Image (cartoon, rainbow, N blue to C red; front, side):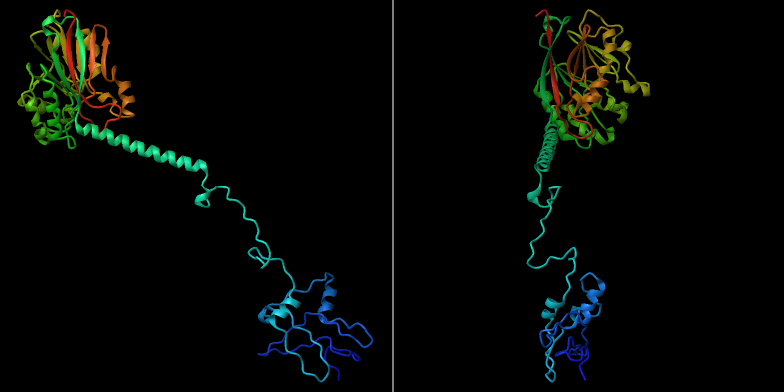
Length: 403
């Protein structure tokens, strides 16, 4: 009987379903045209018929479960009575029977050119891809940070090192010739506290004494704490030396720290506190008023008490912590007011705030017939640093217009 899949009279079978080792059966997927005697064309196989039935010329997709991923078994022709040839190798099956499919998104067929890689629009894929703008911005940011750290470090060093002496000459119309060249050492805003302690106070005292002044004026904000806590830190002030003595007026920080106790402490240290009071010096009057912060405690400034009954023909020097007190000084015929409080701004944005709150930020200024000198101070408040406003102790040298 003819083999399954052949027609009577055909010289050879068109397709044979063979058994694979392990019992698996291959599926017909290829077309084998068997030569007939006389050169006839063989009958189409089942695969060919399927292609024709689809009308597309494309073989149906392989079913799941096909061994080794092959989509069909091979078709072999052999003479009757001869042993069936061995099953084609998997490579041969793939080459002859695999139906091409569109490649997946990750497929990269061997031998085909690599798809071009789109450039990274951010420019940050690799270090070499860093844009020039990003590089420049990082350099600028690093330089700015280094400059800020260096500036603050230098400003802190300047405070801890101690104040330097600044010399200013102030002419007074009423000052007699005998007082020409009279020297007043002005120190303000020492701000003794946890950071600026006893060693800092000693530096201030040594610097003042080195100027060999005729008179020393301590114009407020000496401390930031109680006598109990800071009494030892202030002890070096007892070493101040001047021909006509040392004088003190309160600042706003004294009223935060126990003003009455500090007035008594500075007196004990040999410094004369001027609480709305006046002293007649050999060639001019020296007066002092309390700080405006004392008003809340009933100890505010009293210009009438300090200046009301004096001889207006004599020159008058007034100690008042805050520059805003200059307007009262003008009304009472003061020739020179010595102040502090502003720290010269100390650092940004303190300079903007201090400029807006005070008539003069630092240095010598004139209001009518009254001159105002504002010291930048010897210490610092808050962070112990100064930027653009170095600390100082000012040596005022009075000049007579009659000289």
